Length: 376
Ligand code: ADP
Image (cartoon, rainbow, N blue to C red; front, side, top):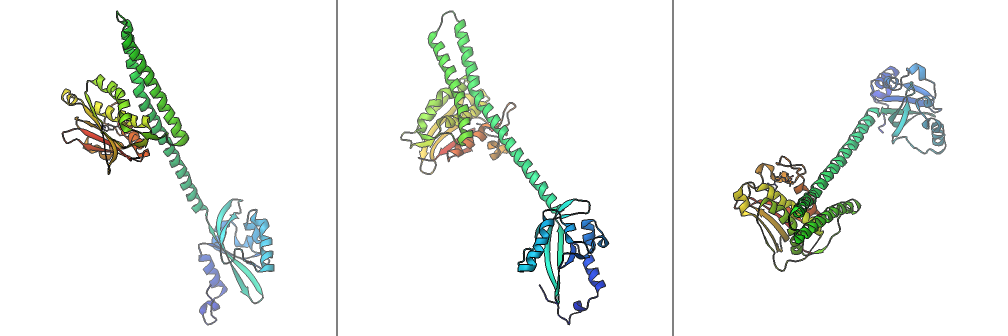
């Protein structure tokens, strides 16, 4: 606090000039004497509290305070007089004030002490925080709304993902049951083929159950169970499912498995889901008979830099360049019936394995998707 020297003109300032200064202030300035009675009330205070100065001069300062401040104030003053301990003086704090209408509003209160000889009083500078609070409240409400939207879009993403993952085994079940129906209608019962169709139905139903189990695990643990895996075996075990998809479209599939592949840690069903998504996309991309004839290549390989990898290569048109990395975003699709979640889900799965899923255009035309997983 700066001290005013006697030689300075401030010291000689008239009461009228001081009042003019107080009234020019934007903040409410209220002075009280030692007993707590209001001795000065500026223009801003009149507007803020809804009282004229004449109405409040001589009144106890508590008229401007709601409970519990009102009851506590007398003991504040008493305590300060007895101990000299300053609670607000010189520091300022947040408090609540009450308007003549009864409306309570938040304020920032700074209090200074004024001494003149043996008499002393207090000057309170009060800033109305209502507008600031309203803005903060609005921001909090907006954040809550955004969080809600975020949760909602996560839920719709998951719902779309489940629909996508369950749809594959369901359509395979439909195909197997139609085949079984045809076999039953045949003149002679081909029990071997019928048994195969039944096995297909049961395998696919188990696969759908496994997808739901994974989802349960995901919700419970946010992570599907991972164990040591041989990637060659994982891919090989899913080949019958890949072929069910490609055979229908008349697309040949060649596979090559690297010898001595290091082990990885992961969830076999999730990785197979990635393989199925990638081959399913390749099937969709191969539109002309010439493209289809060149088929799809699946291979595993490893290197110290890349880790343990598998790739799916096709000879279709390749991913439209305008999609760029956007192809991995949810709901990005160029297909009329597409959901646009296959690549997004696949990348999430691969990332949860500590790996990467990347795209390259095939030098001979077409697409190459590579999954790289860390060596265990
Ligand atoms: P969806 O298959 O439902 O469209 P995806 O996320 O799996 O969703 O794929 C997003 C988009 O990426 C596809 O619509 C397609 O345009 C492109 N794409 C994916 N795989 C291939 C591929 N092998 N060849 C060409 N384009 C592809």
